[in-house]
Amino acid sequence: MERSTKQRRAIREAFLEAGRPLSPQEVLSLARRKVPSLGLATVYRTLKGLVEEGFLTAVALPGEPPRYEPAGQGHHHHFLCRRCGRVYELSGCGLKADLPPGFQAEGHEVTVYGRCPECA
Image (cartoon, rainbow, N blue to C red):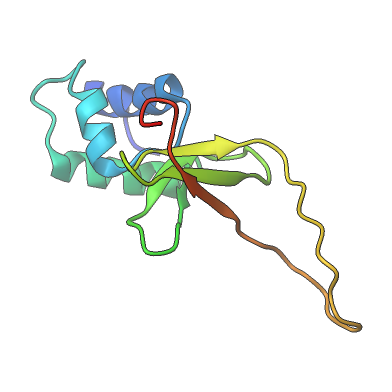
């Protein structure tokens, strides 16, 4: 486990305050409010460490750079605003698929695309 630094704390707090998946650039912008000297290389290093320790998990969206969100939230889907590029969490899962006989689903990913309230 890595030691706690003001940069690491600011990055953790960025996720807790945002309440949605963040890109490294969004993390940098939010965390710089508390640590103005924070650099992008530190953000990437810290994200890697926070994933390794289990605080964060990567969110992979087709054709998009990865975002990160706090781990342990259970199964859920995401909404990607096509205008601003922000990603939001969707609660629950209403997907019910009729699989052909003999098929066993092991998981699925769903991303909803559109415009967030700020961009609508």
